[in-house]
Length: 254
Image (tube, rainbow, N blue to C red; front, side):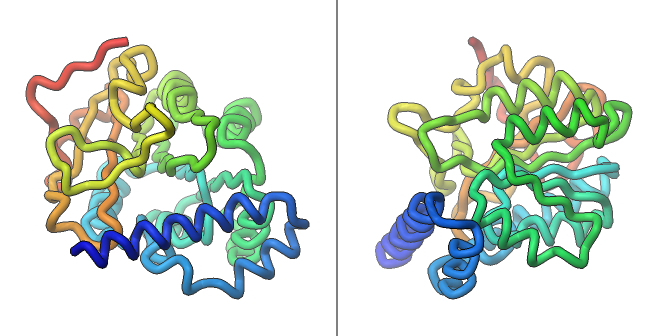
């Protein structure tokens, strides 16, 4: 177990180092380098960190919610992007701030018109989708928000913006702390942990907060935690999925 943990930490360090170092490079150069270091990624080359239970959860969400459009922040190498498109058969907008990664994913899916790569900050990408009416507010919208590796953490803004502008939305946030299951890993940025307390009630609004039913120790891949936020109109449908559960007594303030 200790060896596996060290390997995961080393892999994360290498991947994050590549993300940082590739930013000053020309996108074509960054893409070329990225195409020649696939061994660095391990389960990150699989959908959702190689987590089988997470993949099953998304299949159930797509089946229950029937989203007209899907959105992903943080394309990286496009593994989760491809999964979202294949499972849903619907348009997928994937936002990637790193020019090298964005170029890489755009090239990967150049023959898939349903997958649209947006080389922008995730907040700008969501604003573009709303203002351009690319995603109508009257249709179900499924979002997958990946963690951000930089000091600027827009997650609270993203959640509030999605829930306020798309009444039929479901949001899945990766690398999130599952309060009662330390078998799942999560991200922290300085003293800020990815928790419901960080998001606060002002961002969450009336959304239903749900957690993976699969215990962390039984998950595969990197075993990263997640949280699922369902808008009030979809809460009953999503809450009934066997892959998800609530935590009795959990309250959020702020």
